[in-house]
Length: 207
Image 1 (cartoon, rainbow, N blue to C red):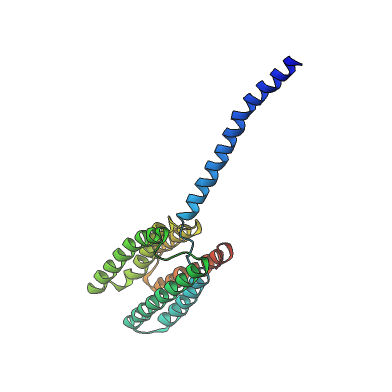
Image 2 (cartoon, rainbow, N blue to C red):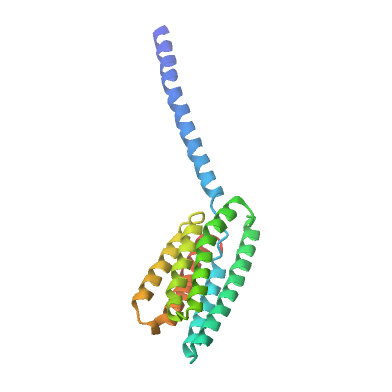
């Protein structure tokens, strides 16, 4: 009996550290997952992105039907302002519903990653406008916006940087196509990509 009791005590002593170790690993995994979620900006709008895509397709159609190049540029400039307003409003609404502040650490990281490529794109566009290199603007806009989405998306859900890479791919293709395809490529990128990925975001990440 004494031997059996000693054997059971020894078995408990052997198994106990293993059990504690498993619990520690599980706790660390839970903490790591929680930290990853807390550092991700999840208020990227899905339905808002789809609306941005719809307005971009409308802008592409209007710009394509306009005879003067300057008129089409004004159309896209107006679309950029409208899309920015839609995106900001949709982001604010989604963050409010999700209880995530737009001045939180993940939101600031997203903004700090998103802003530099957008600023570069804005400055390059102004330079192209000054030198009347209007036909280079569409691929530049696609590439810079895609880079902004990739950089900002590093602090968001995984589908966001994927969308950015798609924008950059279409921008690279636009450089190889004739200049007459500018409005078509703008509609395909800022229109269709926003709709497709907006739908994915809306379904998987709550609007």
